[in-house]
Structures are given as structure tokens and as C-alpha cells.
Image (cartoon, rainbow, N blue to C red):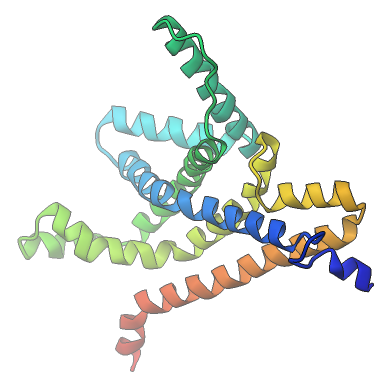
Length: 239
């Protein structure tokens, strides 16, 4: 038992440092997708609500494609497709060298697109729950559309969408384990390497399970705090 636990140490011969580095890559990748996926998902939802046909068609196509494709297939298409496209483009310009796409960047783009597609449905559902009277009140106060959306509508949307967005975030955290297929050294990649070297699958896969459960628990705390913050006016109204 002690010999097995020594494999998790940070000393020479232990895998603790490698697993920690992989866990940090996993968290960094998931966090890097939020600044792209959340605004893009909201933009897709706004396009789907547009009165113009072209934005609605684009939003439907985007949502259908990236919600319908498996996450692994999206990741592989982005990673290899971008490399092939860049290679052909540069070859047409006379460059004959090999083009390699950064694995972290490719994974960030792929998962951001998937996260945006799923979150757009959450935003759309939230839009439907905001009463029309809110828009009419903003117009009566003379607020511009952008100001009304930023100060009145969006805070309500975020409060309503938070439970669904939290589920999408947890799915994103789990989906990051797929990046080991393109050799990005995340938590699962380090775990698989440790298992192949030490022949201790239950130990290292158990540690990986605990890490993902820890990420989920911490995420739940964060989302609960955000939800309490945006619901504070409801609590004050009840009292």
C-alpha cells in the first residue's frame, strides 16, 4: 500500500508533479473556453431571435452542426483540418515547410464552438422567460437598446440561464479528457502515461476520478455563489 502511495509523491520516481501539471492544463483549457463560448453562444441566441432570415439561418446551422457532431470528431476536424488548410494555403504561397497547429489552441477553439452551440439553447430558453413588459418599460424610460439589454435584460437572463450553463460547464470539464487523443498533456494523458509505466490502473484512474469530482464540487460552489449574487434582489423582495 505504501509503495503504491509513493507513486503519487512529488519526489523522484513519483507522478504527483506530472498529475498536478496535467490537472492545471485541464482546468486552464476549460477556463480558456469560457471567454469565447459564452459570448458566442449569446450571439447565436440573438441571431436566432433576429427578424432577418440570414442571421436565423446561420444560428440554426451553427447550433445544429456543433450540437450534432460528437465532441471528439469536432476536435479532430479542427486540429487536423486547420493544419491541412494552413499547409495548402502556405504551399500555394511557396512555403514548403511543415505546419503544426498548437494542440492547446486547437482544443480551445473546438470546445469553445461546442460550448457555444449548447449554451445558445440555454440563452434562448432564458429569453423566453423574460416578460415583454421588461422591454416595454425600458422603452418607456427612453433607454437605448444596448443600454437596456446590458443593464436590465442581461442580468435577468444570466440568473435564469445559470443552472443550464453550470451543466454545460461540467460537460466541458469532462470533455477536456478527449484532448489526450491529439497528444495534449492534460490530466488524462498523464494518467494514461502513469498507468502504462507503473501498471497500476486502479490507483491512477482512481486519482483521476477524485480530481474530476473535486473540479465538479468546486464548480458547484462557484455557480451557487454567482446564483445567490444575481438572486439577491428576489430575497430582499420576499423580506
